[in-house]
Image (cartoon, rainbow, N blue to C red; front, side, top):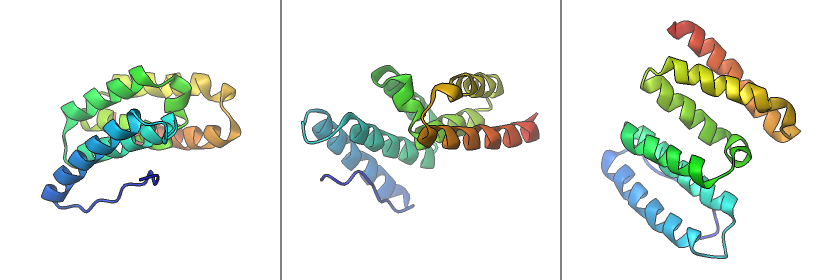
Length: 136
């Protein structure tokens, strides 16, 4: 139960079951002293990945909003999978203006980030620039 990595297969029924199990884990972990905030965040990001895998964009957006309201911007930015999921959802929904705003917000904060966080953010924004240029 202390492992924060979730494995899932790509079959639709199994993804639904994985989401249900993650809901249980998140509920337990949120009310337990055995898990850190960061571990609970990773569980939620795994759930977000499952939602995106099933093209459940409304649920994905709700979960992103929940994470944004629960965790500090620094905690969110330091989780590169969460940031990638945010950009992915915006691309799938063709919200190019929001992509640019999120990218600019990240770039404004990059100088204050730790070295471990700075590189993934720069790589992610570079990839967004490449993809964003292809979408316009």
